[in-house]
Length: 413
Image 1 (cartoon, rainbow, N blue to C red):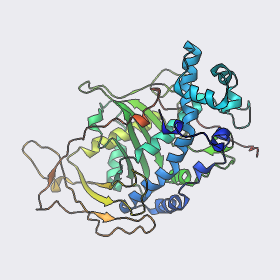
Image 2 (image 1 turned 180 degrees about the vertical axis):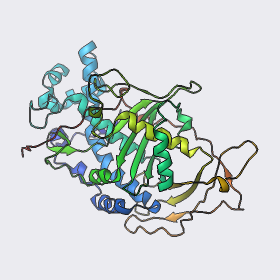
Image 3 (image 1 turned 45 degrees about the horizontal axis):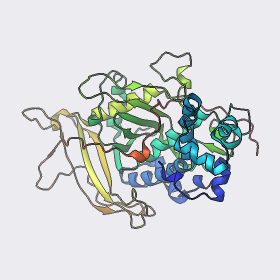
Image 4 (image 1 turned 90 degrees about the horizontal axis):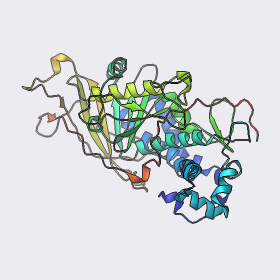
């Protein structure tokens, strides 16, 4: 059960989704710094970006969680009349029966067809929105960051065109969660991912300019394409959620459904561009870029160098107190590749421990061409065992690909 449901009930709880919107205003100074940094992003700024993503997404996740978790329990209650723990919590809170909460879900949760009430949202769309923010928050949990050079990004994007049928197991991932910046002359792309549990992967892809808009969102109602839930506007990052390949199967990852919406690759009458919360990017395209990224990390033509940055003295949360590992990816030419008997790929690591204060983003000594002590190249590291995180495990196993947001030409204050 989430910590959000263990807290004491407060006046803010009683307003539910009608709250004043403090969950959008957490860490605004750091988020604005990250917005500015994205205009000309450098590897040393990855800790700042992770902090800003955490400040933007995690409070929203905590706010939406009690509302999102009641959705699958409403489904179970409709089918079997079983009252789950979240539904029981709300029933006690409101002093209403589970049946009354279900019948009047528009009143208590603002669940309903668009237009049925100001700010009403279909319950499964809200669940998908929550899962998108959950992925963004979870991607920063272990403080793994990656930065691909422009040449490496070009190879990743080229390879993504043929990566659809490639097998990807949890062991193939470079880390259980992470954020990768893919540098491009016309503006970078950002990949975010999180293993929710077992083989269930959430992955996101967004441009640097779109991410800057996400970081700056204060939840205030406005015109334009967005998700409006009651008094606030949400900007979930385009997300795909898939089952990774079983070990030894050789089969590609598979999509499931979320909220009755069908992702790309499954029979559907829904236009492909309407299957994510960004009309320019489908679930399949998101996964293809991520698969290409993971495979390029394991190629002999890829040189990676890792820098470990200690947490800032001002860090207060457990995740922010972890050091950040930044891995720089560059393309290794054939002439510079070291030949080994078994042609095993190699990676070069440079470990630099630095103190980073996100208010003063100066990281000196970032070595882009160094080697470990002794001058020897370090062998390719095998993937570390993935640790299940039950606090972030979804109550349901759905495909996280949901309909595009409806433009909001008229905002009712």
